[in-house]
Image 1 (cartoon, rainbow, N blue to C red):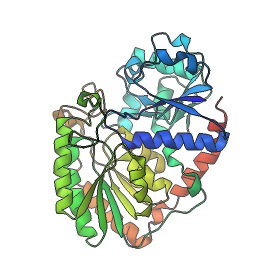
Image 2: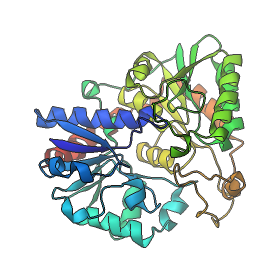
Image 3: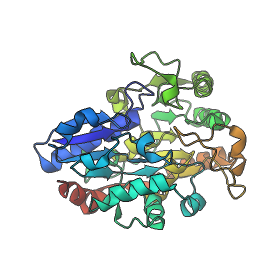
Image 4: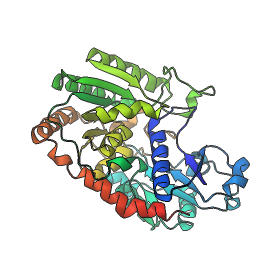
Length: 391
């Protein structure tokens, strides 16, 4: 049995992307190692009461290992007061980092606190490979003298039934998905993207899909607490309400898919995704369907850099950062919007995305042909050996 420390908050934002990662990891481990079982625990839960079963397990797996300098331990990962009581290895799978704007400048300049770095080195020294989901994090860990990192990709990249299949190359968009940003900073830009897509595809069936809950989402757990997630805030809720209104006014159907992974199954029958949600982007790529990601922070930057196509920065850096410490401790985006002056929104991104879509429709999405090979080769060359090396 494996202990799986999930990033999916059942009683918080219900981010279906976190659940997507968790379930994808279970499937590829079960595929490679056959008869295995899992016990899932939320990463912020104290593990003390689970110690006996933990020490009888093979390992503690940490999908989407969230490197957030809060400090990271015990805030992002509660674990327990005495880590030496844990007798099995703690193994990150598909680690990620987050910062705004999270571009290459930040990759070269972010420095973690002593507490977070000490925890990362504690993890690193007890495992053979430190799994990352994108290349920029490899550089960051290397700068912090963690040298056993490897780019395995995100577990959600991999759909076993899609291995060996080519990218779909639509010449007409019949079904389209738009996913909104988390940060209210991008509200006006997002509404302009919606309007552009409505004009470009007037006859298509169009969906505006929300991966996270907000304060107006009906499905909330019995212990729902708004303060546990930046997504569950008044400012994000207000932004979502305005985006929902804009979407309906432009012919989109709004869908909330938080908490329930089955609700994104319809993606497989769509032709294109355009939006800000990283795991909507990945859900399309794993099924070999084109997607365009509007990048709002380091998470999107990492995927865009790693895949090399389909990513457009929603911001443009205007100056060297002087306010990087004033970041939300839950999401990584700035809670004081004035701090976005270091990288204001890119006013040209709507036109650039429109031109790119038109070019790809004319070419049959030729620039996406290599995505399938990237996913397949990364799995067979790196992720599969990593999974098979697990205890």
